[in-house]
Image (cartoon, rainbow, N blue to C red; front, side):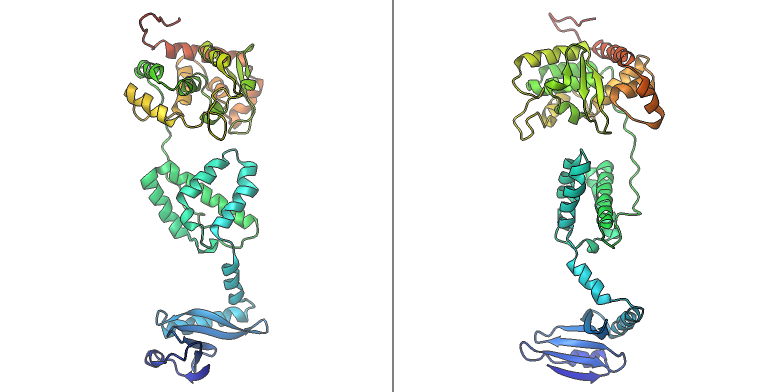
Length: 392
C-alpha cells in the first residue's frame, strides 16, 4: 500500500496506475481535506471520505471514478463532513441500510404478525404479493422508492385493471406502515400515491338474461358448482362464506343459515327461501361431509368455481357478469319488489353508521318477506320446460 498527496485533476487520476495484486494505493486530495481515491489491483478507482467519527477513523464511500466527477466528489465529501460536525454519522446510516431486512423478510413478518392474525382475507395478501411483488424480495426495503411504486401501480392498472392496481397499492402501503410501527425509520414509498378512480359496479342479471342463465345453470354438469351458484343467487351471500358453508350452520326448522363471522367481522343470519331449502335438503341426504359444498382440496370444501362459471356464461350468452354480481342481483330484485335500503342491507349483511341502529332492532320477518318476493320475481322469468311447470 502506498499513499500519494496530489491536486485531484481528471488527467492525474486517470493516469494513476494499478498496484500489485492484493494491494491498494491511496491518493489524497490537496484541496478537500479527507477526500481520497483508492485504486485496486483490478483498476477500480473509488472516492472515499477519511474522517474520524465518534472517535474512530472511518472511510465513507462516496462513489466510483470516473462515474462521479472530482467536483461532485468534493461536494459529497464537504456535505458528509457537515453532517458529521452536527453529530450525525453517515457511515452508521449506511450500515443500517446494509443490515436492514429485505422485502421478503418484512413480508414474512407482516404475514405472521399481522395479516394471518387480524385479517380474514390474509390469503389474498399472500397470493397478490407473491404474484406482483416477488421481484422485490431480495431487495433492502429502503431501496424501494416512491417513483417505482407509482410506475408499478400504473403498469398493473393497465395490464390487470384499476381495481387490482388499487388493492395492490393498499397492500404495499400497509406492509411499509407496519415496518414503521415496528421501528423502521424509513419513509413509506406508497404514501401520497393517488389511487385510480374506480367506477362503482352496478351489474346484475337483467330480466332478459335470467331465463338463459337458469337454462345454462340447469345444464351445468358439475352438480356442486350448479348448486353453489343457485344458493349464491338465492341468499346474496359472499362467495367465501357460501363456499365454506357447513351443515352445522343450517337450521332446517327455522330455514336459516348462520354465518358466525362475515367480512365486516359481524355474525349474520340469512333467510333461506324455499328453492334454497329444496337444494340443501337434497344435498343433505347425500352428504357425508361437514361441508355443504364438499371438495377435494386442502380446505375440504369446494374452492374453485371459475371454470364452471365460464361454461355457464358462455352457454347463456351473457357477458361481463361476475360471481359477486349474483349478490347484487338479489338486492336489485328486492329493490324492484319494494324493499327499502335497510331491509336490503340487513339481508346482504351490509354495515353502515346510518343503518347499524336500525339493524339492531330489525327482526328477520320483513327480510324473509323481501327475499321471498325477490326470489319469486326472479323465478318468474324462468322458461317453463316440458313436463316441469314453474311453481307460482
